[in-house]
Image (cartoon, rainbow, N blue to C red; front, side, top):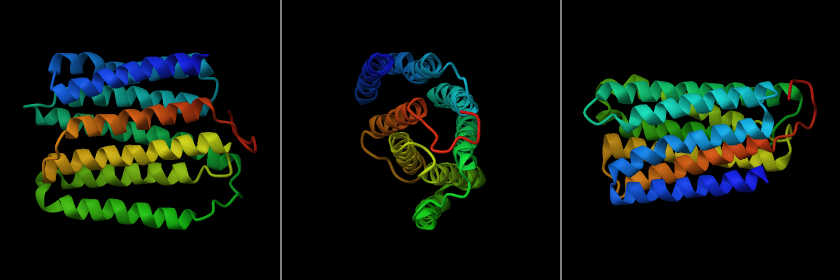
Amino acid sequence: MKTKLFSFIFFLVFVIQLYAEYANNIELRNFSKPLIVVVLLIWLYLSTNLKGRFHKRIFIGLIFAWAGDILLMFQSGKPSFFIFGLIAFVACHIFYIRAFTLDHRSNPNHKTPYFLWAVGAFAIFCSGLFFYLQPKLGAMQFPVLMYAIIITVMAIMAVNRYGKVNIFSFKLILYGALFFLLSDSVLAVNKFAQPIPQSGALIMATYMIAQYLIVYGTISRQLVVTRTEV
């Protein structure tokens, strides 16, 4: 019941946010954007009571994501807000990584098939994107590189959950990580390399899908072998 209710509420916020981005309605966008993570925070709390370390870490990660959303919302004319927003999302991904690590620790002897292939694919994609952006990054080279490394590790750890949790949760969180990569890649190309038509709508759509899938995967998570706190 909670899943259907909050999925419906999130869908409404999703539609409002995309309309605001498409119509360039700043007031509506500033109203709906903070609600994205707020809805997910309430859903996660009511569904799990934050009874395990995994739930707590995802919850804290979402709080940092909410802070990042607010900071990036007001970045126009304030370059420092973009840096602070970037830092907030780095913290978000670190807490996601710490959560995913718990699943690995629940059954560390289980080897994820094609794990090294996934590591190679993510590393090639993120390094290729960084070197494409590098000539236009200027003083932002180091922050962007650090962010690229962190989000790549987050995606790799999402892959590493295979066989350690139920397949439904694994797929949801993995797809969420991939959408996060896509969202941030579009944002980076649009900001530093070349404008992308309707980039705001594309960035927000993929970002909202990413966070929704990660939270849904967290709520539906079940360990195959229980050796850590749920």
